[in-house]
Amino acid sequence: MGLFDRFRGSRPRTRRPSGDLARTGSTRVRASERADEEHLNAWVAERTGVEGFVEPRTAVSDVTLLLVAHDGEWTRRRVPSVAWAHQFCNHHRVPSYDAAVVGIPQRMRDFNRRKKRDGLL
Image 1: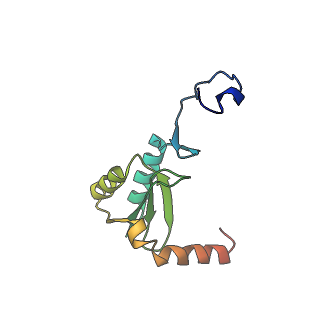
Image 2 (image 1 turned 120 degrees about the vertical axis):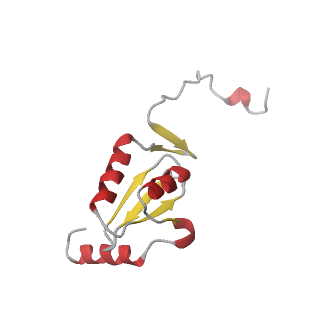
Image 3 (image 1 turned 135 degrees about the horizontal axis):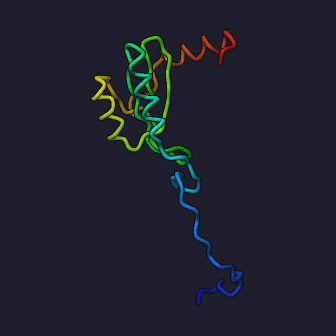
């Protein structure tokens, strides 16, 4: 028996519900879904000059793939793994980078600034 065991209540331990939520640290995030993959497939097919930026898992989100088009338009979705994201980009002949190493492209920030200025973001 530990020093503080006698002060703990005798609450029965309950099992956490399993679902499509992944456990990361002290938070729960939604895992990637088929709809995420479908969105990425459609998005990359409809745009030109797309590059992929693989964002690592953090305390609040799982691995994500950020796709940025030539004009700075972008989309971000959860993906199953870093390897999956790079394979997705290779399959679509899209260059892929580790966002933690190279950062986010300036054209994306410029796109967001234009949209914000025009009241669309």
